[in-house]
Length: 374
Ligand code: NAD
Image (tube, rainbow, N blue to C red; front, top):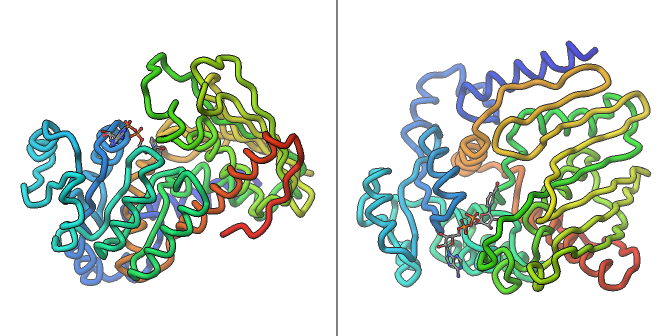
């Protein structure tokens, strides 16, 4: 059974990965002239915020994409302008700062703006990007409140541009296989899920992730999003209730934001999930117990080295460039006018769940999850 399960998926993934995108579009594979036409239409992406994720992951990934390329940057640090221009061959006319950002509206080289700023700045730059007529990818967590998320969605709808969230694991083959195993009940009904995502934060007490004004939440919005996502895409349902607890072992350091949070979901189909996130503990595992077996990924959410096992055997796929696949998929969604699988509504749903977790911590009560956006 495992052999069939793994090999069929392997074939599909390998084929689509070799095309430079997860979405498999038969007419592109079969008709070289259609394919060539698509390649001519590579969309330009401008990264806003050239911090560690942009410089370490997104810019290198944009050297591997087939449907989009790094055409511009927005930075508040003049020294980075020349460094990035030289390294990635970016013309001066495509380099912006936070003051002249809105003039990007006149630049046809930039089709997509990728917001990679501290969390509290996501809403403003997504709205301004939409108002400049650009499609938007916004990093997770989508924003620091569900009201902000709604404003971002409205702005993109009004401007008739697409909005997606940087949920790269939806393009990662091990996680895609977990979605299939869980959602198609390949090992029977899931009974219980455990998922944890956290890391040991360094000793820089000045970092924005410790400041409520910039981060909104601590571990919850940063790594907790992965635990929420992991549980939801394994079950394929939204939870009905959440119950949460917070633990602070270093109250001085984590004065403004959460350090370690455990939370439990009850799903409508009866699945129970026990989840945790932390900025003070290393944890990275997604596990599902089913009627007829179990499956797990450990680790499940890093950029590489994802590894899987199950009661039927190992879950093994090639390691891929998740960010390249994610950005290529969004570019194809724009070129083919299709819906992204990771839309703003999904980002808003997760922020709504974070708000319910915070409410449960504050009240000590189980909170019902109503009117989720996705
Ligand atoms: P970072 O601190 O390395 O970079 C942040 C950038 O924002 C820097 O270039 C900084 O100069 C700029 N900035 C502008 N205004 C600022 C201000 N007022 N305070 C601080 N910085 C300011 O952060 P990062 O790790 O690159 O994270 C950026 C975003 O990307 C966050 O929302 C984070 O959650 C997200 N992220 C996502 C992933 C992923 O795997 N999807 C990974 C890392 C980060």
